[in-house]
Image (cartoon, rainbow, N blue to C red):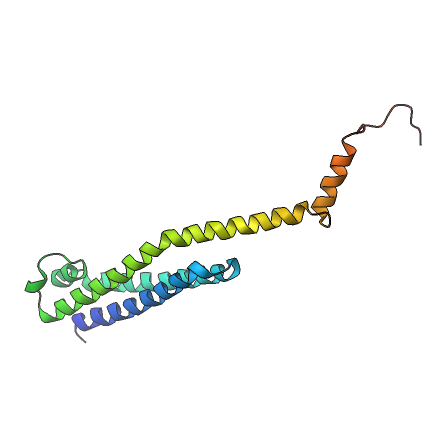
Length: 157
């Protein structure tokens, strides 16, 4: 198999992984905290696979200037060989997916912060309720503050 076909095959796999990554990212805007954690883990696994592909691509293309230029969109695309032009186009498609994912990252961070605040508020409300241990402790401390905390010297047991 020629190096061009190997690179193209790796790029095709990388595009599929980034498409999966994009799909997961889009759903994260509407998930609750438990599901968000699972989606973050799935994204992390996909990124590890993508990193492995990038390592293979780097090793394959280390000494091939034409493929490197096609992968990094350097030079004139019209002057590339047909095989390198396919690599150029596939790499451009991958960059488009990455751009869409990056545009969704800020709204996802905002959603994560909102979910975190929602959970914090819920825990705070639970801790303040009379049924919780923390609530009972808080109530007893507040009730006992009116009197002396230390025993008086005249009390004998």
